[in-house]
Length: 341
Image 1 (cartoon, helix red, strand yellow):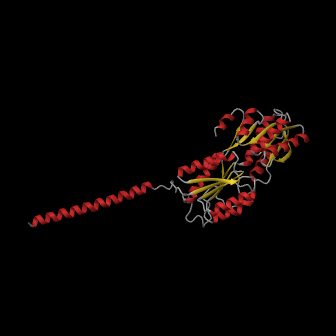
Image 2 (cartoon, one colour; image 1 turned 60 degrees about the vertical axis):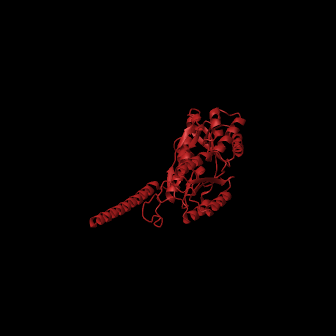
Image 3 (cartoon, helix red, strand yellow; image 1 turned 45 degrees about the vertical axis):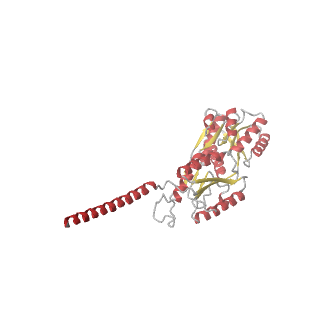
């Protein structure tokens, strides 16, 4: 009888131990599964990341936002596109301030004016909102990084391309640009420097303000044609000016005589290249700008880049200050491939 009681007690203890062991394993497996299911690369679906531009309806921005959106889908977060409808400094500043008030997870902004946007960008960063700029920078602000074309180099490429299109004899050329906007000033500066140092067969005689408006750009170039009937080439630092220049060339019956090198790959530009009115265009990698902007913002928000403990208080920037996203030259020979982008 005593042995029987001992056996019962032993079996009861063994059963209890098994239950505890199984329970422990279950909890351990549950913990392991929980660990496996967590990934820093999966965000909260309620996180909102904003892309802010100016002249927000421009076709140019579509590719940039597509990249931003595609990267956002990888993380499972929400992306929002907004911006000033017009070429209006105050309007973009107001929109940025409104977005900051929403306390978003991050902001990517293309700056219509570097100085005007510095203060609100600084405010956002001070509030803990990651900010990067793309396409057009605010270098004196606290933004973490800018992703853009090396605009001076792009201007150099434009000068080289225009020289090749005009030929060895060269001639008088003009620039249509947007004064007071940093990226356009850099393109014009790169173009001028290239003429001074390498392409001395081209003589720059006028610089006009196209106001990012095709009608205005056409008017400016038409006046230049009246003042200088022997103009051989035009460099336009933005796509809308390029389309306007194409109109002026057609109206002056100078198609084929005056070579135009434009910027970017809007459909109107591509159509004009295909028809031969615009000789070439300098294409920016806007998709890359948007895609990598989103990556940078997410990594900052989730502290995935840690160059040093307490890097924020130590004022260590974990990102590269500038990322050159590159350019390519669009001509009649390769224009069809750019319709697909």
